[in-house]
Image (tube, rainbow, N blue to C red):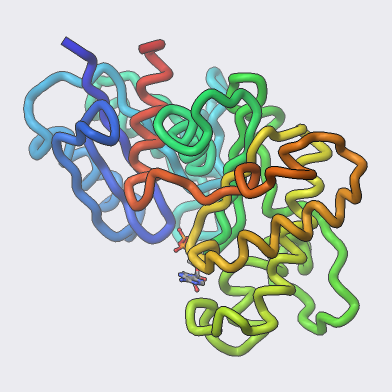
Length: 297
Ligand code: ADP
Ligand code: ZN
């Protein structure tokens, strides 16, 4: 019988827990708001103990908001580290779950989880080097490079790439560390602060989107130059504005200015910069994919 896995999408606003083997086989699922760490983690543990049935799990994957410590062997492995989210800094998430359930845990960033889910079942199948970037309350990116999820020194922080503020933009940016980094200029809350209205309420032909596409294209051009991504998947609430996709594609092509000679960029870039394909379960499926990969299934 095929191994069964657990997945925890640990988000800043909600947690989603599920048991299953993939998109067509989710056996049980629950979602609840992220409150304080103690109650939230206890609820996730209780789901696997009592609600999800008695079938043993081969592993549980946790795809978490961050920053996190995902380095095996580190004394603080499994912790959410320096997050500004109130009450959650230095929270032991993964080993608390491992101790309570006695199941192997795979722990990674939410965006690496999302990248792996898209690789396994979605928009990045058969690729080896690609980026998943979410543009929502924050901006964050996960990456697979030559078949391995990218971690490095800590883990990538693509939302904090430093980019130039456009001359006609009077908004100074909202990142507490950098002001006008990519996240500071182009996250959902930055759109709201700059234009004085929630991003989802701005018309599709509002000038906000041309400027947003400009900033996202700067970030993407840097990523393409740095890791030679074969595809970039753009998710998150802000990317529900589908008119952004053609704008971003055109601006990336213009910024790279013919230098990177690849048909994916110069000719076919509607398949190069794409939306995710796993939909609302992407986060928890990514977590299940982390679990599956950790046991080499
Ligand atoms: P989170 O990043 O918290 O996981 P989301 O990816 O949904 O959640 O991002 C929330 C942000 O995206 C908010 O700033 C919100 O204003 C913005 N947003 C949500 N839906 C839309 C939409 N349809 N169009 C534009 N912006 C949106
Ligand atoms: Zn920043």
